[in-house]
Length: 359
Image (cartoon, rainbow, N blue to C red; front, side, top):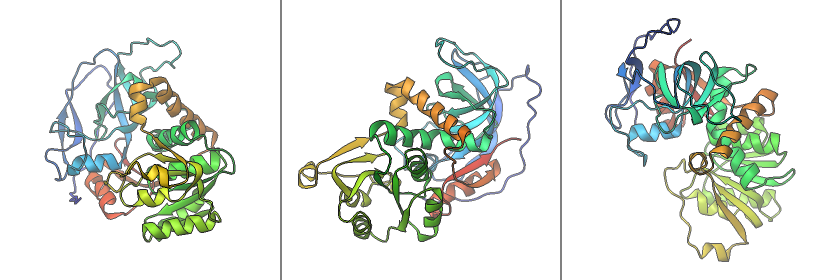
């Protein structure tokens, strides 16, 4: 992937006038794949549908999925022109909530919210239209920056480790891609909520200290897949780990399987290598018995919306209580979106990259 950085002037907007609704919002727009995003006034609907809200965006996280969409490497092929960005925080400025679920919190105009807008996207803009089931109230104790860094990766890690893998205190877990946004979330959840013993594997040595600071008792650079397995078996006295949390895929995945112990569990939560993990069914028989678990927050949104929503609420509560704390590597301006996207192809940061959209 190659992204080109361009400079643009400052953006400004005034949200005090609530009764005037423009059909346009200042946005970073993808007009052609593998080309820089362009800043322009992008047309959005001036009328909400039932169950939708309009958000004045404060911050939007830049995720690996945004980078792959912009480079044309994603399975998701949006109709162009298109505004990426799905993980955002801001203030509700218009609402057509249906309020069908009495158990849900009331969200009103003026409330601070976190949104995981994977269906509509549009977060790299000053205003965004979202669906009500993707909107979560942000506790007053949490900053916008912290809230937007928790939603997607932490909820995925929570479902994968606590719900599906049933990770327990003092069990051992290997987290691959441990310095990425999802990897650091998994380390944080495993070490600080579950009180497990975490081994973090990173692509580069310079990020290993960040992983240890997050709670891993061991963190090392993956020089090659074989060396990762040897190091893990050495640290576990040949037994292997109880759980593997893999978000790399590709050539790392077979080696990760060699790291799991008898009756252990392997959680597949992504493939940052952009190479789908491959598994021959015979591999399940020649290795020690283990369970293979796939986790996708978006699939929970589709098939178990209550679990999806509760998981996001839970990590917001954990953030409020100080049990977890996301690693924010950089906060850039909206005008620096192309620079932010370059970080993924050049391995320039760990943790979350945020865009500050408006004050």
